[in-house]
Image (cartoon, rainbow, N blue to C red; front, side, top):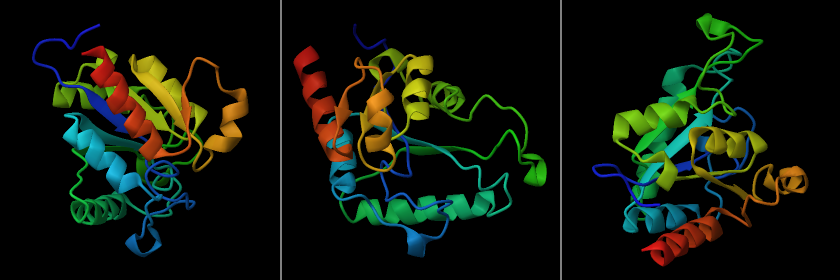
Length: 194
C-alpha cells in the first residue's frame, strides 16, 4: 500500500500507560511523569515525518473528578516537557464521556470512547491523515480495537496495563516493551516499505 496523495502518515498514541506513567485519573502536572524513553520515541516519529496524535479516554470528566480545562493544562505541560527533548505532539484528542456517569452532560453513549474509533477518524479528517498508512500504539485492548476499527495498524506496549493485556491479544498484533521500542519498529517498517 502507498500513501494517498495529499495525506500524511500518523502515529496515534494512547496517553496514560503508553506515553506517561499510569496514574488513575491523571490531570495534575505535578503527578505527571513520562515513561522512560517516551520523549525520544516521539522525537523519532517526528523526525521520520509522522504526524503524532494523542488519543485518550478521559472519563474522569464525566465522573466529575476534573474538567476539560484540566486536561488541556496537562497537555500544555506535556508539550513544554517534550519541547525540552526536541519532540512534539501535533494534536490531542480526548473523550470526556462515560456510558454510566453523567457529570456536565458527558454521560451516555458516544462515538469517540475507545474501543470506538471516533477520535482517530476525527483526527484523520481534521489533519488529512491516511488511516491505512498509520499506526495506533497503546497499552490496552481498547486501543488495539480502536486502531483496527479505524483501519490503522495497531501495536501494544507492555507498559501501563499492556503486560496484563498481552495474554489475550491476537497473535497478529505486534507487542513491544515500551513506546521507544514501538517507535523504532514503526520507523524501521516504514523505511523497509519505501
